[in-house]
Length: 430
Ligand code: GLC
View 1 (tube, protein in one colour):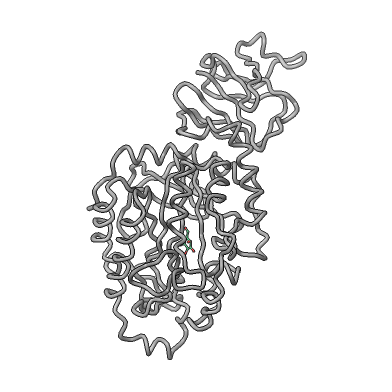
View 2 (cartoon, rainbow, N blue to C red):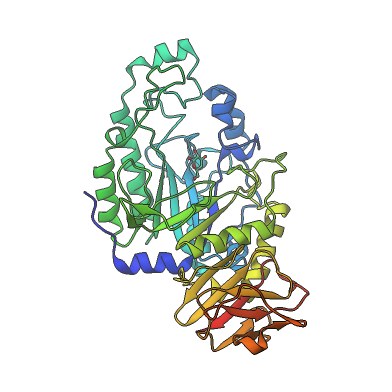
């Protein structure tokens, strides 16, 4: 039903492996999750102060793009509009845009330029859902879902009028900013019901006119990749806030994928949320994704003043410190045919196999199936040799022989001290 994207776009996307997601909008001001309008069932009037006080005076996307590049990221995806409906560019078909705030200036153009200047690919996230548009019918995820009066007033809303708006805005975004690498629509929920079984007026492909929308995207940007949330298959799938347990598939066939993950469980800036993932955990998630042939899109929610807050910057810097030394086990790497030992992940690029040790073993690590197959081994962080033990007479352990190792196992002799990096990697030359 949907044409395949060009092979070179697929390859580029897969080689990138690591990207930045940016969730930015009016919700940065309440600073308590990007779903605040929904969660607290706020009306447009309740939400208006955030529009009135939007003043991102420290917005400098060159800084965002630099932080992303230094973290080892290769592309960045910005929310042009989230579910709240606020547009980060001067849309011709809406007044609910940054251009109509006191700030008054387009935010998308400078973002795109800054990314290009740092050599980053560019993607647009665009919400299908809209909690501000006057023709978007009230459904089970709408802030006014329990407001009988509002529901009665909204009875005549026509989703097709909204769909025209959605299409017009997508056209603007994909016409006005040069080549865009990724279109990331969010999200569909056809047939979704209330817990008590009532129809939730969920929305999907017929509401968005997804087939037509996707055709238009491809026409405007032939090299673009489109995600999978239009309720029709896209070019890549988007597991959210979990790590799949193996390469992702669609109908049994491997499919391009990208896990999207948060720093602290919220996508928008969430001031009091302390559920920050450690840099070590995030690096492990990146490795885990690549070992299963996926990408990681890691999110930062900038503040209302337009900055990445210090906690986000510190985390990105720590990840960047690891990436500086270990980039070659990630960038362009693919899964390996070999099965890694417990608590480890393999990635592979040609004849180089990368062993990522999630926990540091005592003295040795045993690699099944690699006996006699490795010509040289070294720690990736400092290129220091790692000794291999292959043949029996050498595989003695103090006065006895090592138990449980067969001839097809390669044993590596490790230092007792774990190298001082978030996740040590051993580079094996096959
Ligand atoms: C979701 C959420 C959301 C976030 C997104 C990222 O479906 O609604 O707030 O933007 O996914 O994957």
